[in-house]
Image (tube, rainbow, N blue to C red; front, side, top):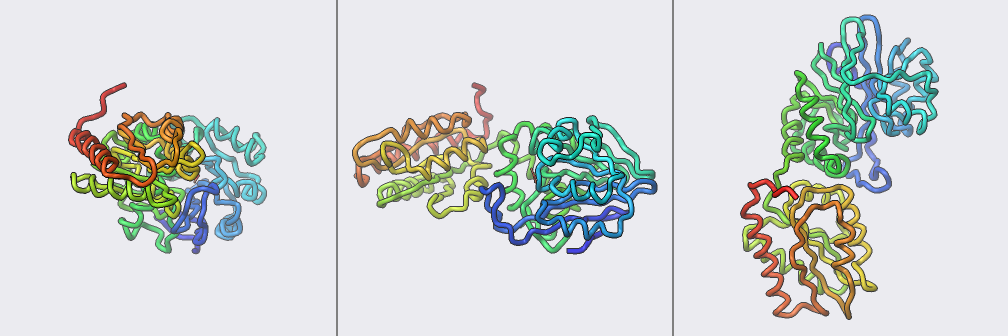
Length: 396
Ligand code: FEO
C-alpha cells in the first residue's frame, strides 16, 4: 500500500502485514494485521506518529523517502510493533525529538536502546504546536501497557489512539468499509489485548471521549471516519453487563466428556440460554476469548488425566484467568477413570475470575442417567441465575 491522505496534510504511512498469522507467539491473526504510522505536516513542523514493526521497516522508510525533515516522532507505546523502527527513523532523521510519556521513555531505552537524550517526556494534556496544527497528548495508561498514550489533533478532530480501538485486520481500504468485519476483528483485539484492563479502559474511554472526535486513527486496522460505532462497542464490552450466554471450552479423549457437554448444551438451549461450545483440540483461542467478552457463565469440560485436568484445558483456564472476562458463574463437567482432583486444580487456575462456582458434574466413565440428570440440574441453576442478569453483581 502506498502513502495515503487522510485529510488536511495528515497521511497514513504505515505497513500492511497481510500474512502474519500469530502475535506474541500466541494470538491467532486470521486476517493479518497492519502497523499504522501517521505523518502530520504542519506549517512549521512535521511529526511522525509511531513507526512500524521492524519486519516492515523498509516500507515505512520508503513512505518517508520524500520527507526532508522530521521534527518530532511521537511514540505512543514502546511495544515493538509500533516503536521497533524508531532506531532506523532516528538514524535517518537525527534531528527528530522523540515525544513519549516518562514511563515510555524508560521502556524505549530498555527495549530499543534509544539514547535517553533523544527523548522528551510529555505530560498528560501537554500541547505541542506544529504551526497551524496542535497535538495534545492524552495519557492512557494500561491501554495496552502502563506507558501508553494517545494524541488528539484538535484542528482536524483526529484521535490517534494507538492500540486503543485497534483491530488486527489487513484491509485494502484506508477507512472502515465493512463495519461488521471490523467490529468482529476489533472485538477479537479487545478480547485478547484489552480485556484484562477493562475497568481502566472504561475510565480512559471517558477521558478521550470528552474530545470532539471526527476520526479515530488506530495503530492496527482501518481508520474510523464514523467512530461512534467503535466507541459504542467499547462502552458495551467494558460495561458491567453480561449476556444470557454460556461458554463451554472442553476436551474429550474417548467421548464421555463430549457426551456430557453436548447434553448440557441441549439442556441450556432448551432453557433459552445461548451456548458457545469450543473443542479446544481444534478451536481458535481468539474465538474463545471473543465469546468470553459477553458471557455470564463459563463451564469447563475436561477428562481427568493423571489426576488433574487435561493439559490443554489447563492452558485454556490459564488464558481465561489472564484475560479476566466479566463472567459471574463457572462450573466444571467431565469424566474420570478412577479419581482425581480436576475440579480443585481448575479452580486454582482461575483466581482472577470473581465467580460463583456452581456444583460441578463429574462422572466415572461414560455418563449414565443420573449424570445426565445432574447436568440438567446444572442447566437449571445457570438458567435461573441468568434470569436476573440485568441487575449488577452484588459487591464482594
Ligand atoms: Fe500493537 Fe501493544 O502493541
